[in-house]
Amino acid sequence: MTDLHEEHQLTKIINACGKMTQLCGAIVLPEIADQVRESLNHFFDLDELQAAAGKVISSTWGSETGCVTACTAAGITLSIAGCMTGTELGNVLQLPDAAGMRNKIIIQTGHCVNYGAPITQNIRLAGAVPEIIGEVNRTLPVQLEHALQQQDIAAVLVVESHHTVRKGMLSLTEIISLAHQNETPVIVDAAAQDQRMSELINLGVDLVITSAHKYLCSTTAGIIAGKRKYVEAVYLQNRGIGRGMKAGKEAIVGAIAAMEYRASEDVQAWTAEQDRKVARIMELLANIDGLSLGIDADPNGCPFSRVRLTPDPIATSHDAHSLNRALAAGNPSVVVRAHHANEGFLYLDAIEMTDEELEFACNKVRGLFS
Image 1 (cartoon, rainbow, N blue to C red):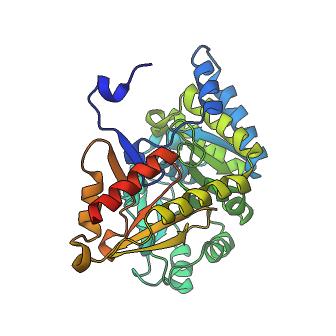
Image 2: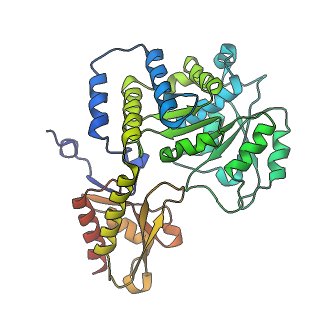
Image 3: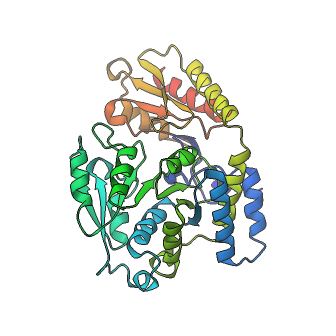
């Protein structure tokens, strides 16, 4: 079998960071890859294939229906567009000119994240305008109520992610209650929250978008689940601005296969396997002078944990930033989760590491502190 790293002179990556777009998503499971590979040999009616995906989305997570798009980022923009246009084809063909439509999208200041690009840009790509409410450390219910009373509000956008500010933000349940009292749909960006999709849908979210290429371990795609009238409006965008964000057969078949795999997966056993790898990391990195260890649960409530590494710069000559750079240097490169480097710590995420890669990563950490 061809070694793509050698053939194209690419750096080999040991992924101790997790399900990241920058690292090209997930390792696709064989059960999913086999179905994707088979799809490449055939033609399909695209609308029929999307309808089949909608049925699987519904049966897997309990939404009325769903569809597949290019990625979560595309799904956010198309969900916003769908809430603006409804199923009026004339509106769809008019975008991104939103004249005559409700075109403001409410979002809390603490949810205006950059996930690799600004989420407010996703809003503007649809021809909409962000209506940003609250401050960076607080949003009051009255601020949302006041915004909802404007005549040109199309939807409320909520981000379920570790990137958001958590202190003082309105909860999703509060937002759904207030938005629905004002007959305004709620869109949730749940890119890495596929393990919580049923929970989010049961709360009454109108549209929720997740990634097929994170914990679902599929080919690159975004999966949209929600209420039928909104999903139909989203899918209609394929005849407008969504044409450049469409999903191909490999994305749709991969998403279907991933959801079917998830439906039969033993999640408790999966969590136990992640716990075993976390325990192994703790064992391999124990008793290193100047390195403090901890175990933190996933902040969004998914069923796994990560190992926290906090180096003492005085004792080790490494702070979190220099440790991150040192681990990433070389080939293979050990890429750790450095979202909190400014706070003085890194995470090792074990999910995408084999036991051999886990040993290599830990030995490299230990070597840097020797």
